[in-house]
Image 1 (cartoon, rainbow, N blue to C red):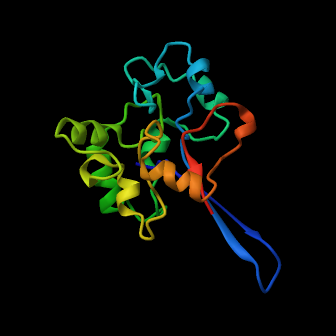
Image 2: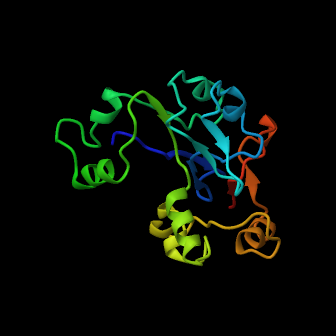
Amino acid sequence: PGVFFNRVLIGETGKFPTSSKLIYPILCNHCEDAACVEACPTGATYVREDGIVAIDDTKCVGCRACMVACPYQQRTYYDEKTKNREFFPGQGKTEMETIGEKLYPFKLGTVIKCNFCSERVDEGMKKGLTPGKDEDATPACVNICPVGARVFGDLDDPNSEINRLIMEKKGKQLRKEFGTEPAVYYID
C-alpha cells in the first residue's frame, strides 16, 4: 500500500576490470538498543521477547518521534497520501498492492515498518515450526529472495545457521557506531 519496508543502496568497490557491485537492502534492523523505542512517548514501539521491534498501532499517536530517532530511516508515516501511492504511478494499483492492503490493513495516522512478518513467525511457532527453517514460520522476504541471500534465525543460539554464517563470512552490522546493536547482519 504505497510502502516499502526495504530500500536498496547500490554501490561499487574496486576498479575496473575487477570492480564489483555492492547491494545493501536496508530494512528495520530490529536493534537491541533501539533508538526508536526510547524516542516513543507512548510506548507504542517496543522490543518483543524474541528481539523483534514492533509497533502497537493502538498506542501510536503518529507523532513520528520514532522516525526521527531511527538511524536507518526505516519507518513510514501511514497517511492517505501513502495509502494511495501506486508502485507504478498513474497506472492504478497492482494486484499485489490490493492484496497487501487486505492482508495488512494499516491504521491511518500511525507509523509502520518491517516487523519481520512477526504474525507469520508467531503462527508458525504455535504449530511447532522453527523460524528460519520452516517456511511458514519465516519472514516472506527470506522465503522469496530469488538468490537465497536472506537468512533468518535465532541469534541467541550459537549453533544456528545464522550465527555460523556470521562467523564464517565475517558478518557486519550496519552503522555499528550508532550503538543500537542491530540484529541485521551483512555478509559479503
